Length: 100
Image (spheres, one colour):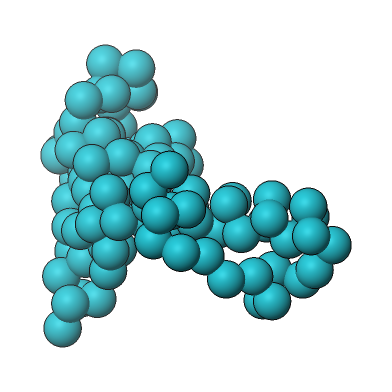
Protein backbone atom coordinates (compact mmCIF):
# COMPACT_ATOMS: atom_id res chain seq x y z
CA UNK A 1 0.00 0.00 0.00
CA UNK A 2 2.82 2.42 0.90
CA UNK A 3 4.56 1.78 -2.42
CA UNK A 4 1.38 2.54 -4.33
CA UNK A 5 0.96 5.86 -2.50
CA UNK A 6 4.60 6.78 -3.13
CA UNK A 7 4.18 5.94 -6.81
CA UNK A 8 1.08 8.14 -6.99
CA UNK A 9 2.98 10.96 -5.28
CA UNK A 10 5.82 10.59 -7.75
CA UNK A 11 3.44 10.70 -10.72
CA UNK A 12 1.83 13.84 -9.27
CA UNK A 13 5.26 15.38 -8.82
CA UNK A 14 6.12 14.70 -12.48
CA UNK A 15 2.84 16.38 -13.51
CA UNK A 16 3.61 19.40 -11.32
CA UNK A 17 7.11 19.75 -12.75
CA UNK A 18 5.62 19.50 -16.24
CA UNK A 19 3.08 22.21 -15.36
CA UNK A 20 5.81 24.51 -14.04
CA UNK A 21 7.81 24.02 -17.24
CA UNK A 22 4.79 24.46 -19.54
CA UNK A 23 6.11 27.65 -21.17
CA UNK A 24 9.21 25.77 -22.27
CA UNK A 25 7.14 23.20 -24.14
CA UNK A 26 5.25 23.00 -27.38
CA UNK A 27 1.48 22.92 -27.02
CA UNK A 28 -0.12 20.00 -28.83
CA UNK A 29 -3.72 19.48 -29.94
CA UNK A 30 -5.60 16.23 -30.37
CA UNK A 31 -9.35 15.89 -30.96
CA UNK A 32 -9.73 19.61 -30.32
CA UNK A 33 -8.07 19.41 -26.88
CA UNK A 34 -4.84 21.35 -26.26
CA UNK A 35 -2.25 19.82 -23.93
CA UNK A 36 1.44 19.57 -23.14
CA UNK A 37 3.35 16.32 -22.74
CA UNK A 38 5.52 15.43 -19.80
CA UNK A 39 8.97 14.46 -21.02
CA UNK A 40 12.16 12.86 -19.76
CA UNK A 41 13.40 16.20 -18.41
CA UNK A 42 10.28 16.46 -16.22
CA UNK A 43 10.90 12.93 -14.97
CA UNK A 44 14.56 13.70 -14.27
CA UNK A 45 13.75 16.82 -12.26
CA UNK A 46 11.01 15.02 -10.31
CA UNK A 47 13.36 12.11 -9.62
CA UNK A 48 16.04 14.43 -8.22
CA UNK A 49 13.47 16.12 -5.99
CA UNK A 50 12.13 12.78 -4.80
CA UNK A 51 15.46 11.07 -4.18
CA UNK A 52 17.73 13.94 -3.15
CA UNK A 53 15.24 16.52 -1.99
CA UNK A 54 12.62 17.17 0.60
CA UNK A 55 10.50 14.14 -0.20
CA UNK A 56 13.38 11.70 0.20
CA UNK A 57 12.95 11.63 3.97
CA UNK A 58 9.48 10.12 3.58
CA UNK A 59 10.91 7.28 1.52
CA UNK A 60 13.73 6.48 3.95
CA UNK A 61 13.22 4.45 7.07
CA UNK A 62 15.73 6.53 9.04
CA UNK A 63 15.39 10.26 9.74
CA UNK A 64 18.01 12.46 8.06
CA UNK A 65 19.90 13.15 11.32
CA UNK A 66 20.21 9.46 12.12
CA UNK A 67 21.39 8.73 8.59
CA UNK A 68 24.09 11.44 8.89
CA UNK A 69 25.25 9.95 12.20
CA UNK A 70 25.34 6.48 10.62
CA UNK A 71 27.48 7.72 7.70
CA UNK A 72 29.88 9.47 10.11
CA UNK A 73 30.20 6.29 12.16
CA UNK A 74 30.96 4.30 9.01
CA UNK A 75 33.66 6.82 8.04
CA UNK A 76 35.15 6.61 11.54
CA UNK A 77 35.19 2.80 11.37
CA UNK A 78 36.91 2.89 7.97
CA UNK A 79 39.61 5.30 9.16
CA UNK A 80 40.23 3.28 12.34
CA UNK A 81 40.44 0.09 10.28
CA UNK A 82 43.07 1.71 8.05
CA UNK A 83 45.11 2.92 11.04
CA UNK A 84 45.03 -0.49 12.72
CA UNK A 85 45.36 -2.43 9.45
CA UNK A 86 42.19 -4.40 10.16
CA UNK A 87 38.98 -4.96 8.26
CA UNK A 88 36.06 -2.64 9.04
CA UNK A 89 34.11 -5.53 10.58
CA UNK A 90 36.88 -6.04 13.17
CA UNK A 91 36.62 -2.49 14.52
CA UNK A 92 34.76 -1.61 17.70
CA UNK A 93 34.03 1.87 19.02
CA UNK A 94 33.07 3.32 22.35
CA UNK A 95 30.37 5.93 22.84
CA UNK A 96 33.08 8.42 23.75
CA UNK A 97 34.84 7.90 20.38
CA UNK A 98 31.56 8.43 18.56
CA UNK A 99 30.76 11.62 20.50
CA UNK A 100 34.20 13.07 19.78
